[in-house]
Figure 1 (cartoon, rainbow, N blue to C red):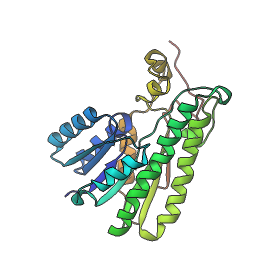
Figure 2: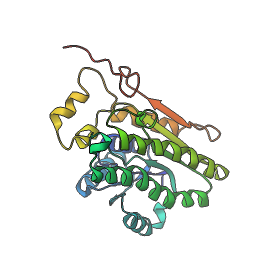
Figure 3: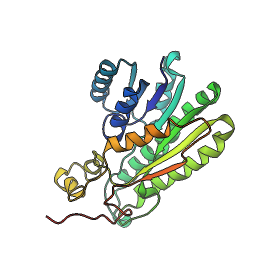
Figure 4: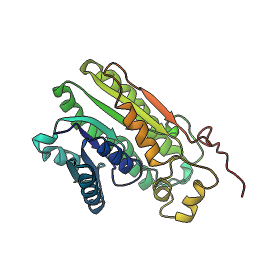
Length: 254
């Protein structure tokens, strides 16, 4: 088989763009997500377009049992995973802490932290056994700066930052690279999900400037995986030119 790359949250946005980028470069792909139809459509399209093999796996990364079942049922020929891209993540709601929706908190913590841990715990031993690999965690500017009403989402991305550093230390003796890619504002389904389907409000988040795209982040992710064995990008913060920090964005007046 070609080099095998596992991408979580591959049904839209950064994950889907990353799947396309790696498919273009002849990686066989394991793509995961909750939406079976989307996964199968993406697998079919990329497989036929680029002549690669794709293993789509629909499950909810928040549930440890589903992750364990996925790994248990992974065919032997798909276990030689060279690259793991921990992309699955989301923000839910924009409430101040005192008005926070605890279900939203649970969803973010379970997806952004625990889901990342479940997959990493399952795949890292495979990489150790095969003598190396590369884990890429998708962080955020929210993992560097806390902003109003970002409380729990920011906390989960701070956790991704800490976990990335911890993984790098623990996996260092095994030749496994660990990289964090931390974007600023990227126009995907992110704001639609965060704002509970309010598309008009979500559009305003990206109005008046050129935000990053999923393809921009996919290019950075792929670049990080192409460097020589002795070179690792530990941490990469990527912003649109119009964004200076988590909350300062220059928007053109209409």
